[in-house]
Length: 78
Image (tube, rainbow, N blue to C red; front, side, top):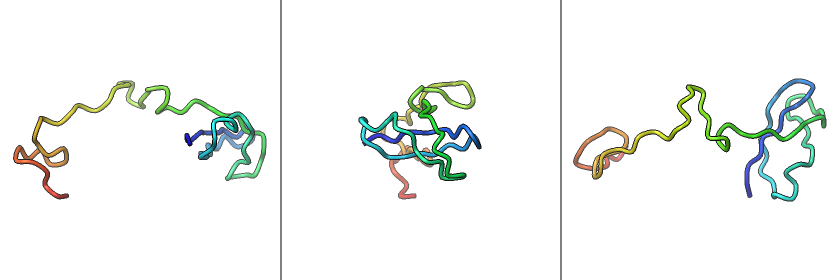
């Protein structure tokens, strides 16, 4: 099941909910104020956007190297 984001029209709070696709456009009560005046919004992740405007994925670490510490000998176990 996908996670959807709903924006409250009263307080602008964003609420996430794990729902079936058939329920995606049904209103969801705001977890902040309880209003049922919410609408589904497109998540930034689904839109491929980022806050810095880059919009892409982070670069892949070099083959065989640790993706966390960069050690060329492999995973560091962090």
